[in-house]
Length: 377
Image 1 (cartoon, helix red, strand yellow):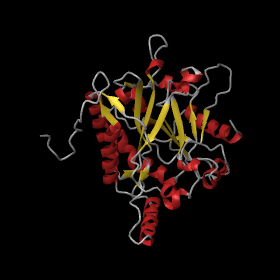
Image 2 (cartoon, rainbow, N blue to C red; image 1 turned 30 degrees about the vertical axis):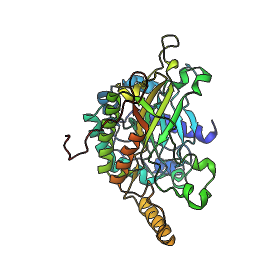
Image 3 (tube, helix red, strand yellow; image 1 turned 60 degrees about the vertical axis):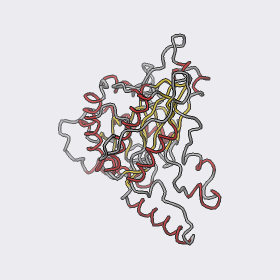
Image 4 (tube, rainbow, N blue to C red; image 1 turned 180 degrees about the vertical axis):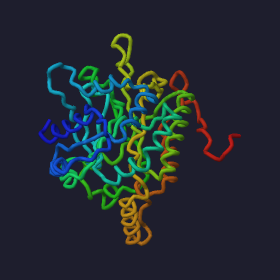
């Protein structure tokens, strides 16, 4: 881990282990604010609405608080505690860490409009939705860390002022043998029929292949499950995407994980499942041909259609289409309406899920749950 990552890791851990002061509303002194402002990497972070997230962890998701806190400590006593750097995995430039036991993933939110959208508009809706749907497939965000004062590091982009802590749906991969870890497959799935300038303009020469490869994944197979398993997935994602639609969110994705079922057997031992209240698609679904185990959650629901950046991109795309004399491209996933994005997202599920019989043969089409406002015949 480089010096920058180590300093960011230290500032995150300081916030996690810091005892909440008795007077939580007492403002920082002038000297403390000056020191905080000139921080470049090691920002003074704090938990945002700590009691609310503790309620989510303990009451709704049944995550024991002591176990949660211990996830951030090194398993080796007497050794320095550091988060594990997972590199720059996001197209947005986010940095990632995992806890030492790999149960939780930490992601920076470098874009101010994403921070504001989740913090000020989506958070209360997200909490209420999880209260009524504790097995929701919206990724479980267990903490939001933020910098309560302006800092130089956040202004110049050397360190993010906001980080989220969330469940790691890949938990259990590190417990497998080194060779088996490479057999785990991940797919960040979203509708692929939108317009992506980096991919679609001028033969895709606007960006290098390393960037285009992270734009969108394609699942090269089918998710082969039972009728009940498909219905549960589609019904839950219908509920989850409904609240995102109402919040005007777009560009979210289905994060699909699969690994060979032979890794979780009586001979090899069970692959551990993500922390907290169990749910079918979070813990793992065995494919009908018994080759794979699938996991799935909904990720990256921080882009609001009415954000300034989305409006600016909409204007750019419309200008490009105008210059193409009416032969331009359709909307981007970040400029389309939330209604259309949800429709295409749920339609995408139909193309990748295949209901099969016990022998692994397709069992015909199955109807998805009826849309809101319609009656099932």
